Length: 151
Image (tube, rainbow, N blue to C red; front, side, top):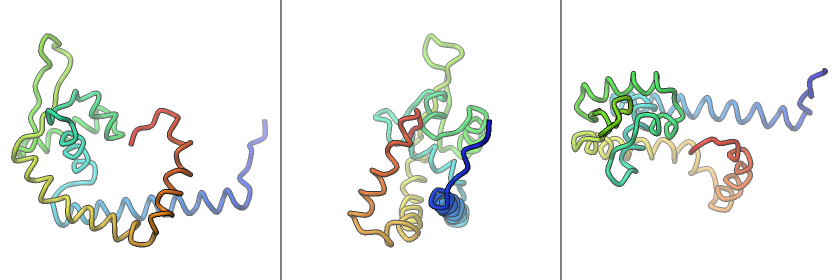
């Protein structure tokens, strides 16, 4: 079966999406490493914990929320835990389920790191778009997220 090659417009869009994601993620990661001593993934682990009413999540749920594997999450959690920014414990009555909890120090670290992170994201993306363009782009990408992805 022959592949369905991208037409010129599809290829141009794909190349733009690829360049935008690679450059933006690299810039955001660099900013967080420089200013906060966190990787982008570590920042999002803290952020996803902060969005839970209890500041806790099962590690398996946290991996999904951060779009990472359990192995990647475990590696990040080791560093975050050694810095006192999260704790891990077994879920009550479930020896195999582990819960990650954002500590008060972790909350402070996130709060200190957030302004620089938001500034980098805003400067790279949102300062260049009108609110109508943001809404249109969000809506245009919506069909791609019905595949079970989270964000």
